[in-house]
Figure 1 (cartoon, rainbow, N blue to C red):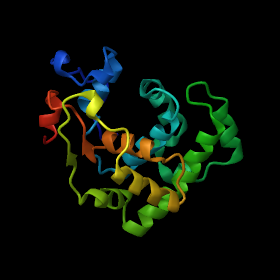
Figure 2 (figure 1 turned 30 degrees about the vertical axis):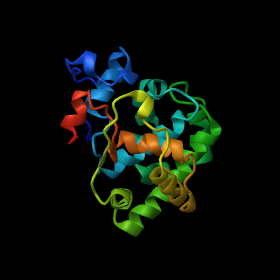
Figure 3 (figure 1 turned 120 degrees about the vertical axis):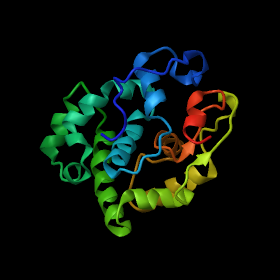
Figure 4 (figure 1 turned 90 degrees about the horizontal axis):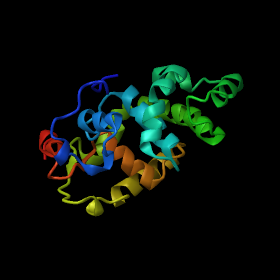
Length: 201
């Protein structure tokens, strides 16, 4: 994928890192090298959309630990391939302990792949559609504590509503705000975190 590998050594400034990633090395590497980095690659945007949906009701670290297996069984998140999954493929996915074995979430991935392809065709790329909501530039927030970081915003509600209208599911406002944070539409690193400034804060 285009993002930095999570095997990359984490930042040395552990004490100043956003506290939500705790002391888990995988979580810290994700925070240090991916979370909040603006993503314009459609395949990566699709990957995060599916993983955020899979995360619903679970912790993000749970999904991160399953991410490599997801990539293997979901054809590296190529939406054109996922959109054509058959019932037999669905049954194989539901039998795989390496992913979240939830029938609704697996079915949602296929449905969202089909909707994703339609958006790609209409806008000449899903990234063009998505980034138009923020006029092509990340929203830079300046939060000083985790309590100040919202779980949802009016813009997330707007994007969620439009995605649902286009046939997507597992795209509620809370999921979409987490998605916006992950793919860099918003910079929600705390101002005390080095990544806030590094990402244009």
